[in-house]
Image 1 (cartoon, rainbow over the protein chains, first blue to last red):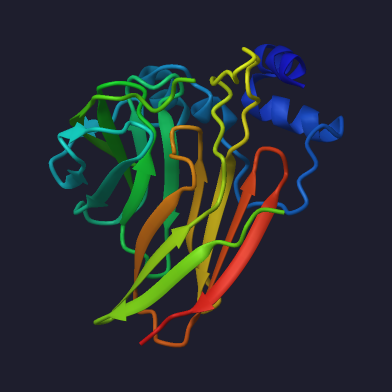
Image 2: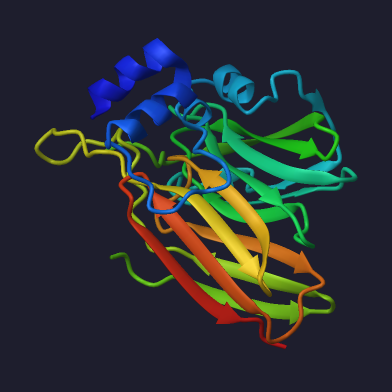
Length: 157
Length: 104
């Protein structure tokens, strides 16, 4: 499965790979989601790749994004983080951990009254910047970051 | 089938505070077991939340989210009694839907 997926990724790009896998019956979604899983972004191994694949490569720094996270996390397996965007018309937020093997942790869209903010718990393998990307309704991307020092990593075996 | 989610939805002013705990291993695919074999990746990939019949939150997650993920969101304009339906699916096709109502 994994080897097949790699081959497909190389050959056809992520979207093609998913479609091909579905056609081959490898992936059988029982429910069609509004958006296909953004495999390319979530499996990107560095920040640049993850940002590019969520469309946020040119995101500008903006202090309207608030990141509440501990300065020092004793347990990297569970790092509580609160993020919020004060930028007008924010429609989605993504949270990334710079030094993790796969940096993109989550990307959420907000609609019908949902405020552009969320609380979540991250895994952090080591001391790293936590970056948040906000997307506004007009398709612009903004970013902010905060360093979290990790004393015991959460991604090891 | 995974264990039920724990969902709390509570009005604060005109905004509903929604917190959900999902019971899931969130294996990264990077970890090795005691025998040195890589533990296959197994993690939640998509999450949706509907409140009062409207889709308010839709998102995707990867392996950098902690085991047994907890998420908190706030929804303005929700009312006490609104039904909250939360759904997730993981990379192996496991899925779970749980619901509650917004407490006043």
